[in-house]
Image 1: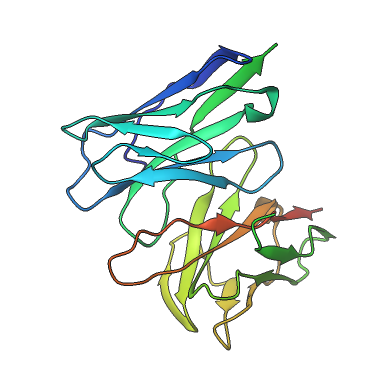
Image 2: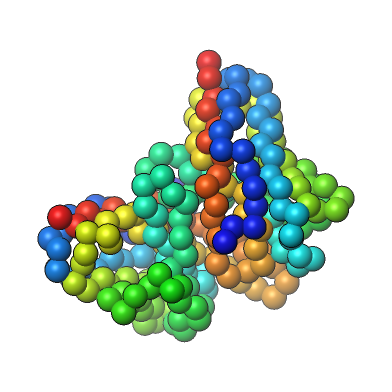
Length: 108
Length: 116
């Protein structure tokens, strides 16, 4: 079973920051937090991952709370092309266990 | 384009027929994964290989399913005696596992199977 809880859907205005929350209260010490997204009819796309520290790359930022029980994915300037299902996954190596994810709708 | 390719992209078959899908991972990646995704659901893990060794199989992988990665490069997934419930998107992903590294997976575009 998925070890994360995400809101089923969120809306965001184009050009604004999209903040997607994820709860993972049972995360263990060696498990990473991964974020993937899936645009309709395509394969999932890796976004970012982290263990303890906040991370940033060209796509997004990942903020992990100090107790590691929750995290937030931040898309700094959302565009219409960011409309997708966003999956938060905790895992150490091996297989990914996907939950239902959050449907993010970016609106103009 | 992630560098992971899958063939075919679409397959329509009649119930009872056998089908085979191919996945070509990113060339230096030593791990290869298969997932299945039905409409409205997240992908579900089926199996994974490290090089040519199949290390884990899900309970979802019935006896009608078999996967191979004979030379540690491309992989095939075969479904024998297809059933309508096998209709889904079959996704392949690859990753590079090294000591102390994390394991982001890169997915292909998927093969959509329709069993009539």
